[in-house]
Length: 356
Image (cartoon, rainbow, N blue to C red; front, side):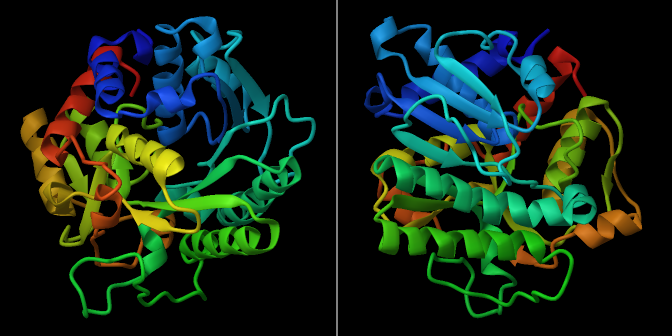
């Protein structure tokens, strides 16, 4: 069974259609989306294309989907490939994009490695997909002369909590040791954000930023090594949930649907030059609490194990990263999923489609 055929997954997409009030602003528009086959990008693709099915041809949203692998896109989107409203461009966003098939009204840069193993094994690509990818897309927006640009950033830009506040607001700046392998990801996100500000000032680009917490959901990829993804994978296979630390790190989490809803809110209603946190207090948990939810649902146990050297090199050193999302809530966004509801539903859907 394909994911898009699963009734639970379709229900999540339709709920997003009901929750977000500004879909009509995308009618007849073109959206450029990098990272189209990733956790966030593939969910947004499905949401846009599924909505198109209910619209007359003149109101449908066209998507220019960019990814590194044509075969991966064909495997992930067999129901959308070949449709008039979707154009897939096989492109490593590190390289300049040439001969873009259209003139996007909205640009979303969501291409990036985003999990521990990739940070350790692809450190150069981790940096360049953000820094050069951001520059390349901003150059396209500048050359076109119009369109809104959204950079998908991360709560990791805040670094480690210095102990002077519980929740990070958008103007907080914590400690980050840049002289480490693992720093490539947050430093690349920081530099990409600074690049947005430079293009706003010098080239008058209409750009904004969203900072996401740790995201999970049924569009997760099989090789995702984030802790929550590992817990979900174990839950799907009814295996013990393995914790490779004491599990006392406390982070903000977000279901992919809530994250994509936030992306749409900022893209369509955000203020130029502003950064917006996404988070919800119901989903601010310690890793061991998330592990316990997965184990309880799977009917298994939480066990502790030492991480491999590769895994350890990719781990985030921060012990607490909680995001204050009041600024985004003022735009109208609200989270639908708490971690228990979202994680258990994710496990159920992935069991049903039997893809992990």
